Length: 602
Ligand code: OXD
Ligand code: MN
Image (cartoon, rainbow, N blue to C red; front, side, top):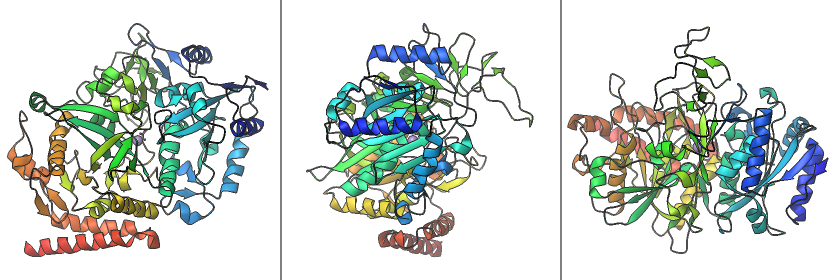
């Protein structure tokens, strides 16, 4: 095995790399320094093997295309495990495996799997290099696609190794494509060892180990132990007409428009008033309490791994500008001129192209069951540097992060949940987050459209017992001098004919504006059994044609429907047994009482 000289003297790191190499038996080991020349070399090699295709460099400078295996297009939650010594530490919502067994099972797949391949060593930092709130990881992988994605999504290379002094801990991330057989695919997390083993997949969420695996599953466990929070949240700055910027953090389940919200363009009426938006992050927030007793957040990532279908100049003009260059496209359609296309993008379907599976494609094609054949996979993605986003906040590189004024939970619910409501207080807000539910999307395997409960949008990402996770939220609130207010939004409510009631996208700023005015105490709100809802006059609808009756429908709280919801929450909580905090049970009982009172009044 040829090994290029390690770029570090850190013995712990060198020892671990050698141990993994002994298991996987790569032909070569290559340490990444993060340079531009290195990037070009990796790309050349990937073009040669077909791992990547170079796109039209005149129209899409620096852009490439990758196609995953056909059975490897989304996160595989059923193959994702939290491996703790005690089963109860993983809790009722995670798949659990005993660590020794997990190392054995995954080890058998890793064994000799890199023969004939190179093992790349990627030192990376989640968060600005050198920030006391950042965490360092090292990913070993046999995939150039992973190397190039990690270059965009994290900060990688020499400066990270310099920050990793001899004894500083790092997350040990081992990834191997192996044969990408779904029966030999495992995504293992070892929070007690600060380690991740992912084998048999090439799909982003499973293999860019800094993202969901480290920055959420492992980090949530670290946060629990160390007294901070790792959340599946975007971070957005709203610049108000007086120039003051307020920051919010918002959690939505995968593929519910987090990237669109993080980059929204204010509607005309609000632009005229002087509102501006600053994007800090679109997927993950690490939050901690500072000496001022307030909650501060950083985005640990450095790029966007967004869903392509549905991204267009109306839904997200900033994303469209972000991906004009230096972008990795995954599983989209390639047009004859080597540019890209996806369903519900800016352009009509091209007369022909190569679909995400690599097959010739024409509009209107159907499979043997009469179902449309998509040009781009519904979970096809773009990976683009955050700095290319026109609305990116300079705070992205701020070691200290931003102060969070409001936390928003949201889901995709055709019925039931009003456009917005505010929790009565932090504890009630934790209950609101814990009972979040949403219709399933293409980012997860499973039946699309089915409602599933997804507490804080963390169901697939909480690296420990979710009962303790709720407890941790309650504790964090109690420690803060002025905790952010907590809200719930639903942009997806439909009328009797199945039409969306709210226009969404940039117009969502109208609701965020209401939220911020509630935070600064300048307006009152109406109390309902589920929380406070806006007085209609306080939602700024300047320039938006929305019938007053539509706003009534959007804000309606039907106590009967909510009683059914409360029963379904009771059933969901049943699976937590004793680990469910008393305070959360109490919140459910109080909700039931308020709903019963409301029914009696009618
Ligand atoms: C994502 C996801 O890719 O949540 O962000 O699935
Ligand atoms: Mn996500």
